[in-house]
Each structure stands twice: as structure tokens, then as C-alpha cells.
Length: 399
Image (cartoon, rainbow, N blue to C red; front, side, top):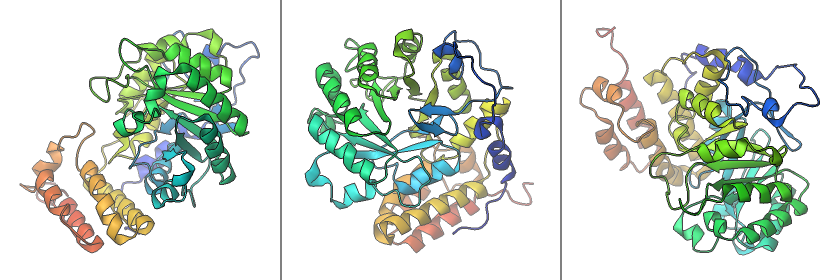
């Protein structure tokens, strides 16, 4: 593996913070409301930095903290999930698995279902529109070691929606109910649901979906703050989730905020605004898997961790690349790694990091990516990555 990570002290500090340790021994009174039990509260008062954050209970599963990695097709494979868990994600949900039994033994499905060596709990996301197939897939993944079954009700991709799966199901609430009931009856482990606020801005039905989920026995509902029609355009809105969190008839249904949570301050703002039980980080973790550590430290202390040095970023990226080569084989690993390298060299909004480019003395991220995307071997890729980040290191003269 790559050399010992430098500048580890900030990470050590945050791993020992109350948010990550979850050492609170305070007991909630038996009569406490759902609002009082949750991180923050339904009165939307400001979260206090000097409190311990209780662990999160999802059915019978106890999470170490309230930061979750969102499932992302083509991204949240085993190497990426493991890396995000290493940096503090309490739960890392798998890539979406088809429930079509004919696809169960394909290479893609096998790789997406590979959790060898991962720390628990193991969360597997399934997608489909047939209640029987969904139940069968849930049982199959339970038998394979899944601790949580997550149902995809939010994917906006056309190829998913055209088979009436993903967010297309939002247009058929009766079918949603049948699917959720079939899956919750099929397994004894917690069933969770990831959804959007509705099919379109004029067809928002989140409150009804939440009640259907609650009645079916779903343990957790993660809400992306956009409709299917919005895709990823514009800014995620959390008023819909805020209203949902204020409703008392959802019992112990865990509510999770998702969408555009791309910084520690944003995470705090979303907690404050919604009163959600947890936040789910997706695209912001691409190229920045340590965002979970940054958020945890900020929530615990009110202080931002120092920006990682180029050397530190390089070491993390090299670890990630080597994990990809081992998991997929060198040839496929090189191809899959290209997108990740791009994310490590850009900020969370997709633009070049100007500070990095300035220190690179003309060796811009764009020029580097153009070159590294033509690399055909793991050795070539690693050499180019090292060379690029070496040029970003402060020189003695600059110091």
C-alpha cells in the first residue's frame, strides 16, 4: 500500500470526538417525544456543539453515528465504501442491485454484491417493480449476509424509470405499498427506503409515501430533496422533509436528509432546518471520502479541520487506486479509476481547485486529467498521479 499517511493528527482527534465515539450515557425519559429523541429536535432549535450525539438505531441495527454514504451506481463499490467507512461513515449502502433473477449471476451483479472484508452493518440496495421479485431478492441478499435491505425509490435514470422502477414508482403508490409489504415480510432485518419528494414539482407525494412506508414496517426513509423531474438540477430543498419531521404520526421511522450536503456547515444547516435523524452524503464524497471526518469533527467541536495537504490527498488517492486494481484487476481498475482521479483533482462543484492549479505552475488539473485518462496501465497511472501531486507540494523557497 502507499506510504504511511502524513498529517494524521486531525483525523485522530476527530475519531476521538463525541460524535464519532457516541459515548453519551444520558437516558431519554420513557415519555420523550420523537422530537426529543432525535438529533436536534422538531422545534428546529440550533444544535449545540458541546453535546454528545447518540447512536442511531435502525430497527435492530445500531449505527455508530449519523453520517451515511448514499448508494451511487458505478461509484459505491466495495473499495469506495470501505474508504468512506474508514473516514467515519457509519453506514455505506451498496450500489443498486437488480432484482431480476436472470441478472443475479452476472459479473456486474456479483461485484456489486461483494462485501468481503467490509465492517458491518452491510446494507444492500435493491431495485425493481415486481413485489415477488423484490421479496425474493431481499431473501437472497439476507442469506448472503446483508444486515439491511434498502429499496430504491429515487433513482431518476431513464433506463431505470422506463421499467417502472426507481423514482418511477412514485407515480404508483399502491404498487409502492405492495412492494414494501412484500419485502418487509420476506426478511427479519431492517428494510429502508430511499426516495425523492415526488415525481415532479406539481406531483409531490412525500407525506403519503412516508405513511405507506411506516405502515409497511420500513425502518428508515432517506429523502433526496428533489423530484424526479428535477434530476440533479437546481438546489435541493428541505422544506418537504422539515414538514415531514414535524409530523407525530410517523412513530419511530428514521428520517434522513440527502442532497447537496457538501460541507460540514451545510450538514449542520440541514440538521438544524429539518430536524432529521441523520444525513446521507452522496456526490460530495466523490474525490473527498474524508468529508465524513470533516463533518463529524465540525458537529462535535464547531471547528473545521485543516484542509488536507496535497501529500495527504495523494496518499489517500493512491490507496484508493490500489484497492480498485485489486478488486477489478489492473486493466479494468485503470479504466474505472479515471473518474475517481478526476474527482480527487476537482472541488465538489466539479471545477478545478484553483489553489492546486496555481501551485502546479501551469500543470493544471485539466491538462493532467487529459494525460492520465490516456494511461493504459496501472504503473503509468500511478506515476502520473504521483508526479502531479509532487508538483503541488510547497517548495522550500515558498516555505
